[in-house]
Image (cartoon, rainbow, N blue to C red):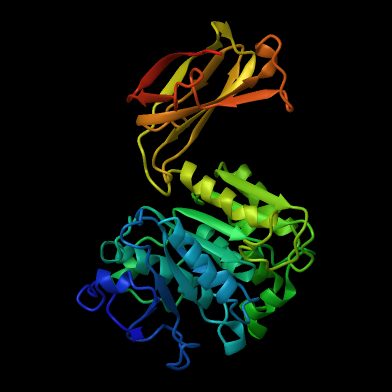
Length: 402
């Protein structure tokens, strides 16, 4: 059921009980009519479907989801609804954006205006949605990936005709971005011509305008941390798009992570049934967790020595994991018994469990299939190895008995 409301005063119309319902709530982004609209149908009035995480599971994070479709359609199921439900499984609320399309006569900067408004709407109404206004991400697929990359790079742009209501005074900058097999360039030989045509329209489809919306050229140090997924076999939107955005992030000091799989045609979505491609979403989950996006947690530095039966471990690793699956996980490399993590990459403060891996060669006469040993016990039969991490610097002397 469609519900219209003014953005900062809709609590009485949209209760948290409604937000937690199994079916999403449909919300128009401009209750009084979108700027530049040619009519009052859904194709003219951008809206979001609100998929709020269950009350007992929510961690307060949120994502605006931009389905793809070449700016000519919307793949709103496998790049919208399925993605929203997946986020809900992580405790993240999702807002699937139905933005205006070139095939309906809407061209740039209308789409940028729509995604900016979606992010602003979610942030302006964070309290009512039960989310943290400082943990709002944007993800997009294919042309929606281009839209999410515009959200990540052009958030300070003020398109002509935008309204100046209370929502438009709120920041449109996403806190993280995840362009997925994204259209990025509109000018290179690997550009997606259909997306360019639909986005720019017949009157503005010039190289100068195309350069303005080629987002690898618009990355700055203020671009939010970015996660990218791509496949090498994609011939519709080749990997050069995602790679160029990743390299632009590196050039500007923006934290970025790129996963480029060999197999996979364009438009796979989450592809959870595939044993290879389906793992990309797990990397996204882990990246969000270790960004502190799923659960902001105080972290501490650790340093010290790891020994086995009193002898320094030659090489290995120590994983520090909280009982909270949303909290960041830390992993320290061990070389000649020594390990060290600073306060940004160290374990979360509080009780953590340890998982230690080391070379089987460190134990005389021990042989394992892969040459390593992994254990969660300090000594055989001792149960799970736990530690209490305190704020500040933790000096640890860890010994494994075998």
